[in-house]
Image 1 (tube, rainbow, N blue to C red):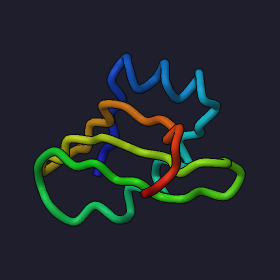
Image 2: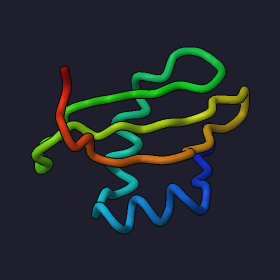
Image 3: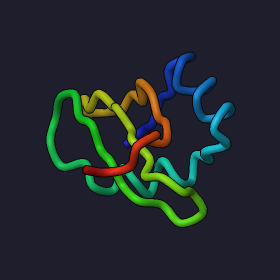
Length: 73
């Protein structure tokens, strides 16, 4: 699968210092088509990372990614 990043997502990754490697690890949990929100605790970050993506047959578009301010509830 190819991974595309929206302009907004590229800016958020740079702002919060999230690498593409971290995003690819989080995307291993993708198992169906459509828009998805994935939240996962990542080593090196105080709070979990939330990734919003749109999954098509041939590619995944990352819409945004950011650390949750309040953590998981």
